[in-house]
Image (cartoon, rainbow, N blue to C red):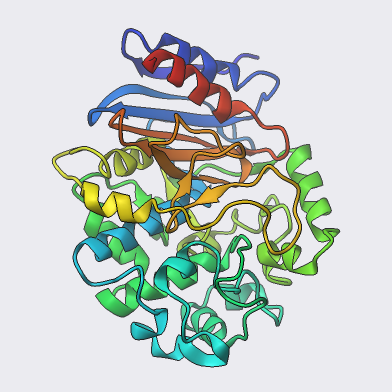
Length: 384
């Protein structure tokens, strides 16, 4: 059965809508949404498929879903805003704002290195349980105390889950607010449909996540990776399933969705994400989050090439927390920046096109997943 696609597409953007519809092929229980803004204005706003395969609930215009590591991109925008306001400095030591972080040889780690996966804290040395994952103070204290897994600054390895507590504690130290509260404060005028720490009264709207066979196989392979730290970066020991979700566990667990897990636990609609990214390059819904000078600082290349722990290429590229265009994640081009997320989520901005983009889905795939890539390719051709 073909998915029912709803929403609007401005003239000229029909190829983007066609690529979105094609993403549902052979995925009968998939749900997804796509939002594209140009110059702050919606030009594509589409949704379709199934939000919850257990009940058959259809995806609606306001269906949010877990956006996984797209949350890291949003966190990096929050940090960039604090840099713009003079409350953080990318070149300053993290310990200037978070004194306990200096322990175990980390006194010279800079904010920029922390954001770009170079702090040596991609996993915890001691495995943790699910309940500890939900405890903000436990997680940030553990990371502050830990001896790095490699010499900080000498290389990078993806901080799949820990990145959120590291960036988030910086936000908390300078604002006095947990990142979810600061996100709401900063983006409330732009959108009300993005959260780190889901309010209880919003839980019924959220899509139910499904792990495809490729996602389950990727989880299995992760546990057999050449370096144990690669698997621990995702699971933290016993806290998370390797595939990130089970029918009722992992990021399908309401307790996790309600917690502050800003490395992967953000929840948003596609429209909210595209609005946030749009507002980094152009006034959107009456607000602009970052100025051009801050964007130049945030996009300085920090990490690329082969990581500390061997993983197959191609490899991503990161600025100061922002994911840049690369062979591993193709955006519009060199003026694009954003962050993708596990299972197929993609959200980014493009400075030259004054664009904000978000594709989100509850059907999680790994390996050769070209759904968003094909949509972005169609958008690139439309924009010329």
